[in-house]
Length: 125
Image (tube, rainbow, N blue to C red):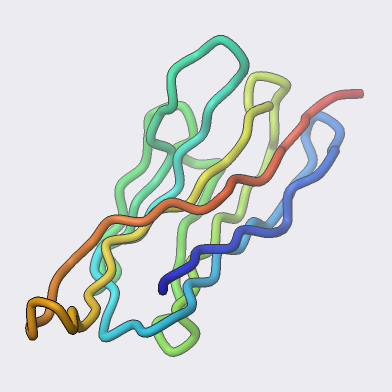
C-alpha cells in the first residue's frame, strides 16, 4: 500500500509564498520521477514542475523563476517552493510519483504511478 500525502497549502496574499510538501509512504523500493500538477476550477489539470531521481528539473513556463521543485530521497518527499504568487496560481495542487515496489503476485519489482489527494492554494487579497 503506497500513499502520497500533500501538505502546506492555504490562503496567501498576492506576492506571498507557500512551501508545499508531499511525502510518500508504504512498501516502497525506490522512487523515480516526482512532480506537481495543479487544477483550477473549470480547467484541466496541468503540469507545474517535475524532478527526476537524479535531480533534473522541468518547469512549466508560467512558473519559471517563481517556483522551485526539490526532493529529499531519504525522506521520500518532494517539495514545491512557490514565490511571488499570483491570483492565477489559485488551484488544487497535486503531487505525483512513479514508485517502484515489490509485487507479491508477480514476484518482481513493478513501477506504478500514484497521485496525492491534493492541497488547496488560494491567492487572494
